[in-house]
Image (cartoon, rainbow, N blue to C red; front, side):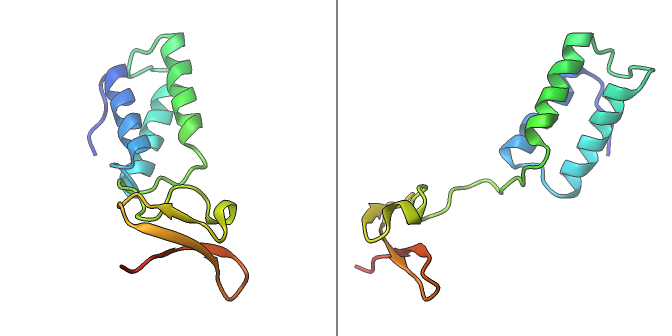
Length: 113
């Protein structure tokens, strides 16, 4: 893994992590590297105080969140429990209906044509 040499490079990596194009070992490795660069007394990225704060806030937004792969789910984005018994158009253009499963939880089911 190469090292980042500028503030702009660090922001670019954090944006790709947020979009979901850098996950798993890529994500953990880069976060560890950027956190080190912020904490280091040698200041390898030559960061100003404001830039350090901005990177810390970007990392705070990412921490604790599981990054999902790029792409939308086919069913509607809204929760099925809010629309139980109703029909709604999904992200893939098909119609879905929200019905209770055997455990009583509402889920989206694709309506067959």
